[in-house]
Amino acid sequence: KNEVEQSPQNLTAQEGEFITINCSYSVGISALHWLQQHPGGGIVSLFMLSSGKKKHGRLIATINIQEKHSSLHITASHPRDSAVYICAVGYNTDKLIFGTGTRLQVFP
Amino acid sequence: GAGVSQSPRYKVAKRGQDVALRCDPISGHVSLFWYQQALGQGPEFLTYFQNEAQLDKSGLPSDRFFAERPEGSVSTLKIQRTQQEDSAVYLCASSFDRTGELFFGEGSRLTVL
Image (cartoon, each protein chain N blue to C red):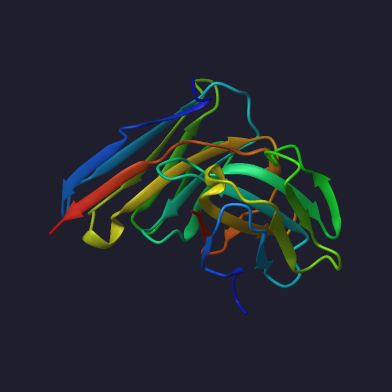
C-alpha cells in the first residue's frame, strides 16, 4: 500500500469546471508538496504547505494535518491545466514520498 | 541558466553499457536531489547532496548506480552495466536548502535495449 494515495487517478473535465484532487497520507509529515508534470517530463512545484491553505491564481491547496489529507482545487479549469498532478509528503525534501499522480484532462 | 538543466534529454543504451547523466542545478542552490521515475509512477528518491557532500544515497537501487557532485554544483549520475529495468526518467531537482521549494529539471529519459 502506497503511503501517499491520490484520487482520482484520472480525471476529465470540461473547460470552466471546478476541479478537486485529493491526497491522503499515512505518515506524519512536516510539509506537503503539490507538483504539476506536463507530458515530456518537466515538473513544476505548485505549492509547499504545512498547514492551512494557500492560493495562487486559480489554484488553491488545503491541508488538514490531523486528518492527514490535502486537496488541490482548480477553479475555472482550462485545457492548459491538463497535466499530471503529484502530491508528495515528508519531513525533509530529501525524504519526500510521492504519490502516483492524478492525470487531468480538460476539454474545451 | 535560470532553471535546472539536465542532459542528455534522451539516452538509448544497449544492455551492459555505462551511462552518465548530468544535472546543472540553479546557481546557489545547496541541495540537489536525484529521482527515478518509472513509466506511470511517481518519482522515487535516489540520492541527496548538500553542497559536495552526499548525505543520503539510500535510494540508489544497486551498486551499479553512483552519483557525485565534486564541486558542489554540477552533479553526475552514473549507471554502470545498464539493465532493462534501469529504463526510466531520471529527474534532478535543486533547492536553496533542505526544506525549501524544489525546482526540477526536464529529466533524462533512459531507455535500455
